[in-house]
Length: 461
Image 1 (cartoon, rainbow, N blue to C red):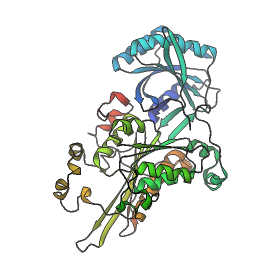
Image 2: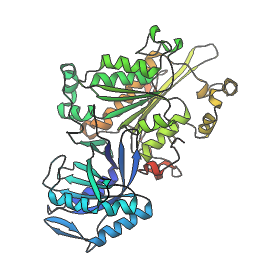
Image 3: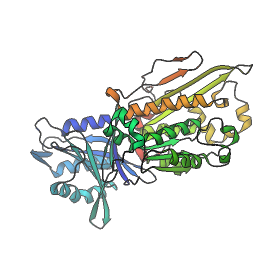
Image 4: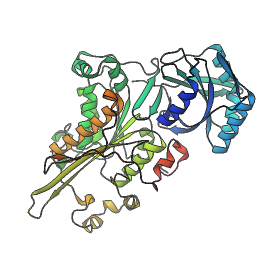
């Protein structure tokens, strides 16, 4: 699916502040500014709205329509420059519904100030409009020649709150053509929800057994735009767990074999799959991950999870993570098999606080020690990095839990969007009570929310 190179994202908290101000009880238009930070993917630039700047007395004139005074822009520009951020202008169309176009006055108000904003911040001026039903639209004003700035529409505006809500510009992210193969799926949640759901660009990091099941589920559900990131090749010992592979695929890169398989499984009329041979902590994998609206973490090592954890907060891309841990006793008999699923994002605990990786091992992996057999052999028995046991059925169940996490986030059935952190015990046949936690008070990640590329802790060199 072809999609424009721009998007906007914000947290539910920022969205709430903006809409509370802009959607006035008296039905008049209003205005405010906001600071934003860039998130530059391989093919998409996202403006991450980080903080709202509300007007003070005398900053604007509300008269049915709204206008702002130069002092308001000057104050907002000063705050943006001080924070090393870009500037966005937000205003309301209270009688509008869905994605909004621009009136001649709107165009003049944004275009005539684009040069001043770019000159002060070095970043494009971003304009945003909220409709009366809460739907956002957005555009970037980019310098095309001296004293000339052109409008580039954003294809999507994403709000990452209790659920993931997306407003699409239909001309840039067109509604999918629903096929006969999707009738039973559509009957579960309706045409409108299906159209919004399957337009999400979804990335799967790790094309092993769990990632393969998730990818198959996405393709058959009708998703149109799937990204696969993995550097591994298929080996003989993988074939008992890879849904998409057989003996003729041995030696192929996993993402290539899986991508070819998905093209045969997909039910979308315009299905696109992008295989990326690499790791998410390498430049191409990292930047491609930033092009996605949702990411599935199907990795089993700390470095990849650490980077994905950073992306979830700094770049406002929800990361649906899972894991499997199988243990055998000294006689080689199954003693325990547990798997879990959860979503790391603003407002929910991060993967580190959930105990999904040991931050102390991130540098150990970066130094190559986790690929050293002597280092692995020296770990104590039962260490998660030493475990390699898994079976097809366990991967299938873990993938199902992760897929349901994503569907809850996007569909929010009966306003229930958060299943919590889930854990299942095969031995004992029990599901733990879901956990709804927050990050530890000393956790770094909540302080990185919406900082995008300005947060350089996770950017590949």
